[in-house]
Image 1: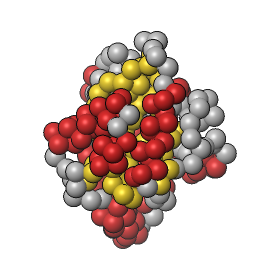
Image 2: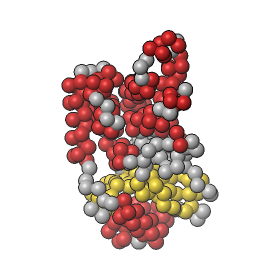
Image 3: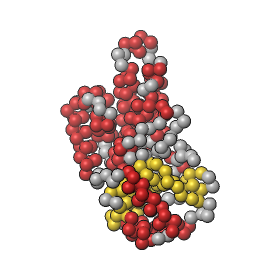
Image 4: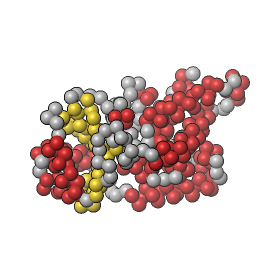
Length: 286
């Protein structure tokens, strides 16, 4: 039983990368375990590797969820952004997502543009090091087809990623952005933003957010100055790690109401993701 339950964290890490939602990932892993415990004892004993069985079942559940998620997101109010994860999500270490490059917001957003099969093949093979034969069993295609899916996904990743800025430098730039925003220094904000930067917000119809992405560094700077002018006196900003990268949170009356994730390249901010949907902020506490 201990060996079986020790697989939980790995499965949760897999499901979160596949689904972009920690809540959905937890449901998928719970469903996989429920299917295991529903098996007759004789069938459980016949399975050589319960961990491999759980991985296969979790992968298939996620593949099905990805197909239905695309339909649900067509009716989602505003832009959909993956659920942000704090550094210390979950009281139990077994429930925590490992924060590395494969959960950065920039990475997850690129994954969202992939087909479900591409996403599953790429994550299982390139991130979790499963063979294409194992991937094929989950995806329901030949190993050769899964190899092509992963290759296509790899090209998408390469095309969308700029050379990484060291994390310490990213933190400094995010800190400078926070100071400029609080000081309402529009020139400083423009200087920190890439001319082609994009800002996207997710309120899910449950919180006020700008409905469409804001394109261009100057437009973003002006929008942020306007936000600063409307900020309640009791709201404050703080630096926090968001999906393993330097980010910010807005705290209002003691509760975190907004999470800001950033992509930094060449010492400029290229993307800002603003998550305000309260259903995606349940794990964010002080």
